[in-house]
Amino acid sequence: MGVRAMSGKGAWHDLIALDEIEEGWVTRVDLGARRLAVYHTPSGFHVSLALCTHGGADLCDGYFDGHVIECPLHQGAFDVRDGRPISAPATRALKVFPCREEDGRLQIML
Image (cartoon, rainbow, N blue to C red; front, side, top):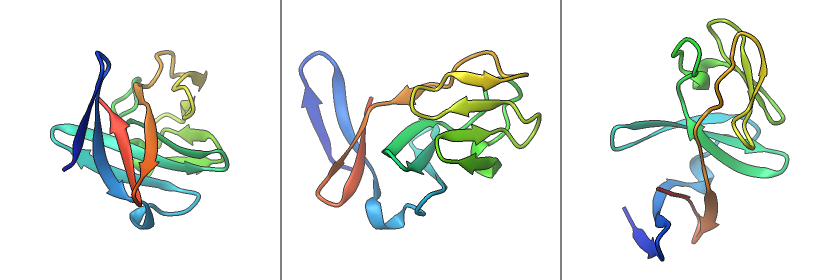
């Protein structure tokens, strides 16, 4: 895994090859102990923790449309661009990570 240090902000970590990400859908990626969801959206890639903040379900099993992921357990929904909840019963935002494309790979900052 490639890591590049950033001044005082963390480091970029290689996450997944771009050609392994399903176009227009959600791809689950484990990075160490972190279970992550990679979203391929009309505006590019976004990354969040994969577990719903309401019921703990795996969002990678949910319904995804455009920029919205819906939890498969209770149908709470989140905007994947910033993690904010957009429908009940979800009330707490998802943890999202800055990401970028680099040398054919998606990287996130931790």
